[in-house]
Amino acid sequence: MTTRPRLLLVEDTPSIMRLYHEVLKKLDVDLLDAETGGRALEILSETIPDVVLLDVELPDTNGLDILRRIRARNLPSAVIVVTAHGSVKVAVEAMREGAYDFIIKPFPPDRLMVTVRNALERRQLQTLAAANEVAKEGRFYGLIGASLPMRAVYHVIESAASSRATVFITGESGTGKELCAQAIHQLSPRRDGPFVAVNCGAIPRELMESEMFGHVKGAFTGAIGNRDGAITQARGGTLFLDEICEMDVSLQVKLLRVIQSGEFQKVGGSDAEQADVRYVCATNRDPWGEVQTGQFREDLYYRLHVVPCAMPPLRERDDDVLLLARHFLALYAKEEGKEFADFDDGAVRALRRYPWPGNIRELQNVLRNAVLFNQGGQGGLITEAMLNRLDPNAAPRPTSIATLAVAPRPGMTAASSVKPLWLVEKEAIEEAIALCNGNIPRAAALLEVNPSTIYRRKAEWEKERLLSAG
Image (cartoon, rainbow, N blue to C red; front, side):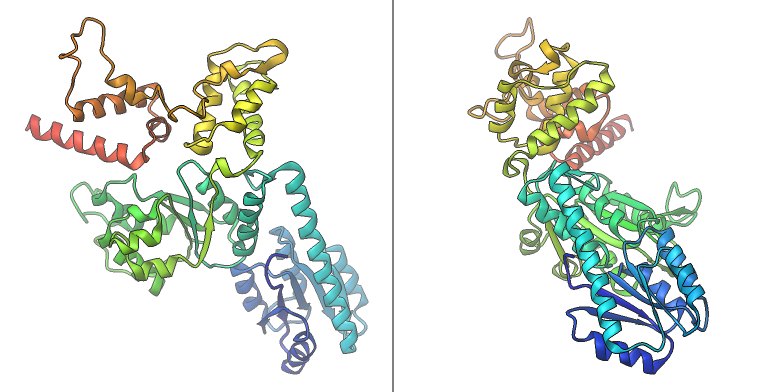
């Protein structure tokens, strides 16, 4: 286990609850109390305890129904069922339903201590086995990597996933921040709820408030009907705020109010709605640096920056580059119908020595191009020659789209080949988008800019076009 173990005590008799605390306080654990089945289900919706000490006879429900709910959601909690004397039949049924063990009342304190300690040790062994599997396979809930930096990330994910604490993911572009957020969601008690991602830098500022909170009919020009925002869409699940540091300061104030109060209003609406979401944020900037420059509110920073999680760049992940490269090679070879199976020694050396300034996204682009523009070589191997532009001594992208955009065209003189800088940028962006079949995030990766930069430029060009037409 990666944090202090959590024990959920479900018991409606105060004297027995006091006994639980008196005996179990000797263990280094966090104790969570539930006097009713309803309260137990509320706690289980917010956290994943390591062990549940579950009384069968509860005032509002049968404990076995709670056990079935735990197993139906595949929660890893070890459940110890507590039954009255003479209820062996109930204990047997509980074991069939997936309980770890049972205790029959009345029981001596030593019996309680031994049973709970055994359950905790079992959970620890399960966690260690899962960690060994990650080390062996290099895979963790959609993330790929077995290096020490990535195992540290997995540790943070496991520790934070079971709570509602906000996780703040940082890292360079292309390091897999959204995959990290999805892993947190998949491991959390909210895994059955929706995962909604909002790129705070990709949506125009004037539309962002509606995107977050929704709007009612007539709230503004073009609002022809009611619309749910991301907070409503993520109800009962996780709201992932990507590139949070690019959110407009005025909207940061409103988001802070929602986090503090747990309520929000749609744009143009007057009714308060509950914000039942778990927040996960990400940025490729230094969030504290943004606070110091006034681009990000300090009070919002402290509200969101509860559990920091730093995604390491690919150049610091040792041989993870080979795990990732083989994964993408198999994926793209299947997509393109090519018979590539692995890399030759020269390609392996090239993959290891290249610094990968664009991280995993750049690796994906290089391998997709290698598969797309080459046929299966001898033995179905990718060669070093097929891996374009992997010279560690050269600029990261000596043949980038931006470079091609300013190159003289046939028939041009030296003077006529010089263009205004804004036009060079516009042509480079449009060419990159065309090459990527309209995929703006992929075009941004080629240009080594944030996708929000492209979205903003496109919005500016459209505004200028409309003004010119008017």
